[in-house]
Length: 123
Image (tube, rainbow, N blue to C red):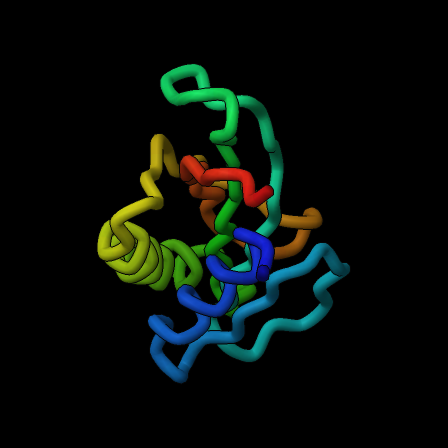
């Protein structure tokens, strides 16, 4: 059985337009040539609203602009954020709670979207 992180990564990768770079692991990013989406698993805990065999998983989706000019980055992020939120909302088991503006690795302007899903443990 695949992990939820891998299942989510495969679904997001398939839903993203070809103009995007998708990264599903933690790594240092230098120069970006395209809009970039980084997925990072943040938390895994017992679900407070489901039986003990269910877990709540938190993923961060980090939307990054390839632009180094702040004005161009801001303008691009307006559309990029909406594009990713539409993808997240198309998945039945993945919800988002907030999108926080960030400067990723002190280089790239973006948004970190906090998402959550409930999964059942396999026995």
